[in-house]
Length: 218
View 1 (cartoon, rainbow, N blue to C red):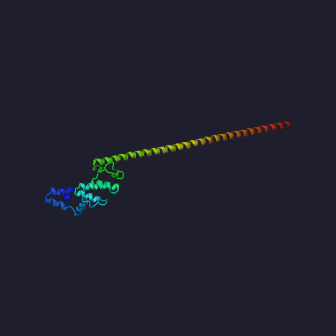
View 2: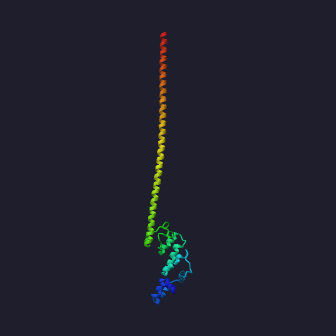
View 3: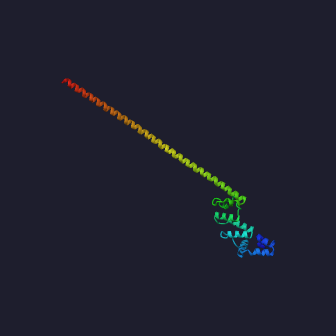
């Protein structure tokens, strides 16, 4: 019994403050199985594990035991193999906020678990500071990523514009060549048409001149 009084405020109060009748009423509310489990944890006969940690934390509230609560906190932070999200949910439920910024392995997954403002308001100042710093860091990283993506998009667009400009310039050069070729062909056609017209005139003049000579001879 002395051990229970030393590790539980409930038992300490029951045997130092309450009357015998009050003590009897209070102790009758305690389940024998819960008391046995609590005693086994205090005596190190029951080892903490990921399956019983939540139940034992509930017992620390039932028996108001800081020593067992500390033992559970240490297990959850340093030994438990639960996922970061599960750890954080348990920590939030039972008020385990003994995390420090340098404890990278036990920072209850600020990156995996979204902390609500209501949950944040119930934490101690150190934990709030860790989470708020993490939020700021995430926001800064998000802004950097957005800036990088924006720069990548801009660079890509500029490259595409430059490529299109080069193609347009090539097309313009091709059009100029075709236009020059067309002018050359038109000039050639015009020259040939003029030569043909001149030849026809000369032929006509020759024909008329021959006829006139023939008439005079006749």
